[in-house]
Amino acid sequence: MTQNGTGKNQIEEAIEVAAEAHQGQYRKGTDTPYITHPYAVGLILMEAGCTEAVIIAGILHDTVEDTDLTLEFIRERFGEDIANIVDGCSENKALRWRARKTERIEALRTASPEICTVTCADKLHNLRTIISEYDLIGDTVWDRFHGGVEDQAWYYRSILDAIADRDTTLQKRVERATLTAHDNGAYAIPDTKDTAPQHELSDCNDARQMPAVADVVNAQLFEQFQQAVAYLFEGRTL
Image (cartoon, rainbow, N blue to C red):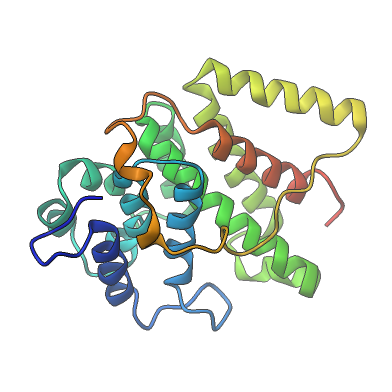
């Protein structure tokens, strides 16, 4: 695992940087500290066997978009590859909601596998959280989000389709899942836990054994994201 000059590994450093940057922020409509989200994204990426760079980018993915940290800071502290992934996961908050979502969705059609993989983990954790909250408070959960369930369904389905468009293997997964849903009349229910399996990020030794660059989008995370979209927006009446 890569270490910096202080002896810390870069994953630990990313956690500290993200925790400080997101200090005082909370998950939308809750009193849950925001840092739980990027931390969970990192855990999801680790569990899926992603590279160290992708895990770090997952932990930092919202820092440029939602905090005062700059892309130049990320590049200087963590390197060009990680900065490029974070940049590819960041929205332009100067645009209105639909415009900035559309811009990001279109960019995913030609984005790197690493950007798409972090996006899958990010959106998967968001959907797991919404599913958990929906089970507790029902339709009220949609009051927290722009446009309610209709806009959110458009957004998550569009991300799924954009990522699938860049990879014929993923397109086949979408087609197969659609056919299975029509045949069975139901979708598989995804894991609704708000976090990934419980182990510390700093305990990961597999990341250093992975190749530096991924050639394809992580199929495991894409499928879990696909299942969560189907379950929340198509598999039951909300």
